[in-house]
Amino acid sequence: MSFQEIRILFNNGLVKTPVGVLAATNGRVLFEYDSAWVSGGVELSPFHLPLAERTYRFESGRLPNRLPGLCADSLPDGWGMLIMDRHFMRQGIARNDISPFDRLAWLGDEAMGALCYQPSLRSTEALHEAVQIGVTAREALQLFEGRIEDAGRLLARIGGSPGGARPKALIGCAPDGVSFVSGAGSLPEGYSHWLVKFSASRKSITSEYGRYEGTLEHICLAMAAAAGIRVPENRLIDDGNGVRHIAVRRFDRPSPSARLHVATASGLLHADHRLPSLDYADLLKLAWSLTNDMRHVLEQYRRAVFNLFVGNRDDHAKNHGYLLDGNGGWGLSPVYDVTFVGGPGGEHCTAYLGEGGQPDISILLKLAEQASIKAADARLIIGQVQSAVATFSALAKEQGIPSGLRRQVEKQLNQIGSSVCGSAYIPGT
Image 1: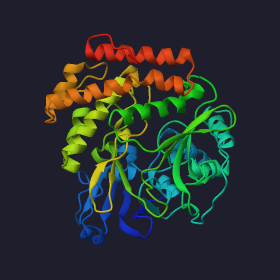
Image 2 (image 1 turned 135 degrees about the vertical axis):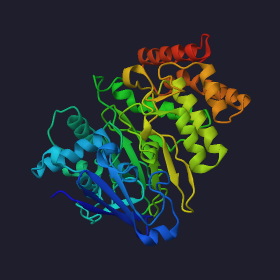
Image 3 (image 1 turned 45 degrees about the horizontal axis):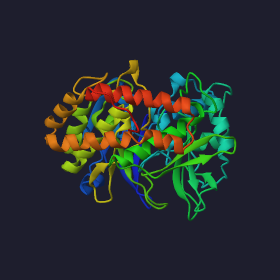
């Protein structure tokens, strides 16, 4: 079944326009733009695939997921890969025999963002099945924890394309906010596109916070918003079993009839997100190079400071995103996958001028200086982030986080604040 060539199209929600062709041969990946796309002038991957009528050649082993970053961004991470692998295993195809092209064909028109792939292994028929969050969450967590071997048909359809390691699914939310349908493709009129991330029912080796995972991420996003960071609309969904899951409105689907192209720092820079491959200095340079707008540089700096103060160390290359608007302009996407989570060896996946452990305020100020951010502006941003993080205790009480867990997180935040600022910093004071 292995595909050796696949077509890439751009789906803006209304029409599909050919972008180019991807081919594999002798350990290399070749890419050519469609001449009409080149004439259109829209840059989807300006650093490694700038618009030109030529053949791009890459050694597949040196690419993220053995694909150019433009397409590698379409592939999911741990959770989506698990769903995908189980699908192919049902067809008698071993994991090692699944090519990256096979995975793109499996995604077809249901990849995140605006890119889609042909030929497609998926049916184009619109299926709008009712989704019961509690039932779907239970199945997803059983599969994730290895208690069942295979995903049911519905979960396989709505759970296979989202990124990230934790179990999640794409759903459509009704205007009443309490009715849901499968939402990987088109939706019924009035519904909106959301991604729900399932909280574990209990604390385990794969879930430090158990049933409070979603609530803590919801709190973290509230603090990010208070810190002046653009966050997606999000809410908590009670599954009827005493567990709340966080649902995030998809920013790549601003309306039922619109799709936006999404690119990550990993895809744009061909940086391996599975390794600590980037520095925040790289991300600040990327923000300026891609947008030529200091507002996005300042926003990226604000996110770097926030990730430090909340201990979000899973800040790898795929967790920094950009959106291409309808006029061909780039801008930072709303922030995502921000919560209290450790990184490899307790360090940040993205370093601060080479420091991945616990950089102090002098490094934050030097990072700002290198990005041409005034010291006064940097200090203002740091203070705003501190003030936002200081609301954790009140937010946690409001959301019913148990006192023991609340004190655990408060201790972590206190230690980080003290280390960064060189003096005691107690959240909530």
